[in-house]
Length: 354
Image (cartoon, rainbow, N blue to C red):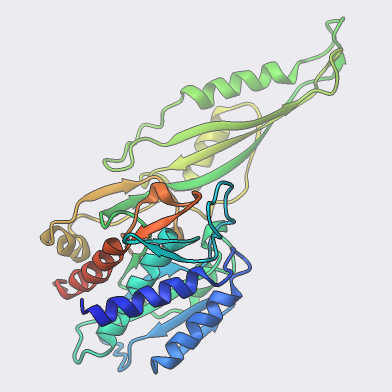
């Protein structure tokens, strides 16, 4: 990757960091990206705060690859030693909110798009979506864009993975559970303690193991994370509510997991959403094979991304940076990682055997 391209990518990353972009309030970075593409002579489409571009000479007879990363960020956590919205370039690091998650991935994908946009006779089309509301899995993010896109062959999702290939990603389902008892005076035996009823079900959530295990994601994981019951010391509680965090593997849909859970426990169970399913891509897929030929490693990712909305086509998550830096104070990306992202994405697509 040419030095000039790297400097342009670094400049765009700094501009993104220094533009307010908290999820659901990322109109500033959307506008910044629209102006950037206009300056590059690339036609863009904006839906809500999502910015979409397509390679010129789009040919419907060729497969279309989706490049996606997000430009929204979480709120800054406590402990920042500098202004999170002021990019600091020091000692080979770029420090600032969203630098690692997922500014470096987004910028790398943008310049990968621009690289192929100038090439003649590409064997594929590219659509790049710089999405909004990823950090909150919002309905005005990629989810509202997917239905208007043409048929997608497969997708590349830019997230910090150390340029390892996440060929599977865990899904999420949050359950609200309620055990129903009967209120009564604690001194008598005329009540049914809802906490005790809840304890039986909580024990099931703690110990039950779904039989289908994923090679890369392992087992489905269920965790009770919130519990509420009771009003005062001498009243037997008639209700006990608790919340269960369910991390699914690609062996089950969230609906399938819900049905099994609902048939196995006594409490009332409701799912907040079935939208955030697990995903995977076969190791035989040309995209994975291209990565393996470059010496890239495969793994299963426990964290969610906009990949959850790519339900009608295979996708892979890969990008520069370290997921452990995401959502932390003093977030940063190494300039060498940005360089690696720029180079590897181009090689990954150039090496495809479609």
